[in-house]
Image 1: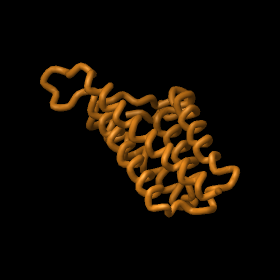
Image 2: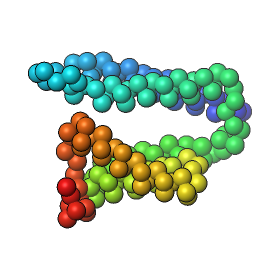
Image 3: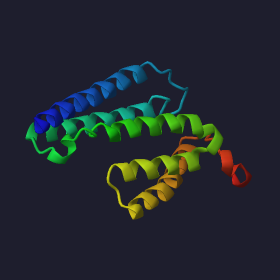
Length: 155
């Protein structure tokens, strides 16, 4: 029964990710384009949507192949998803206060650890990802990011 519950959960999760990704693409298609810029406000939502669709298809493929591990069939199998939702909500609330870099580092530290990453992996991702994302958003896409606690060292 545990394996069946895991497969059903994976099918529901995978389908939800694919549907959410498709919905994001449809909504982003209606975003207004900005003059002569080669990319518009729809670019990032479409990239995220593509990731959601690919992730959903991966989950569905694993469910179809039936190789979901038995250990996930415990009564606490829903806990990582709940923690992920709490991290996303916390990120949204704390972003203006802590700033992009600190909030992103903390969120990634928790998420990578909850999903099985070693402490070394958690620390590496938490340190490097905000730097890379800052470069992409701030320097390339010209998206202003909140500095929060790091305002004294903002450039």
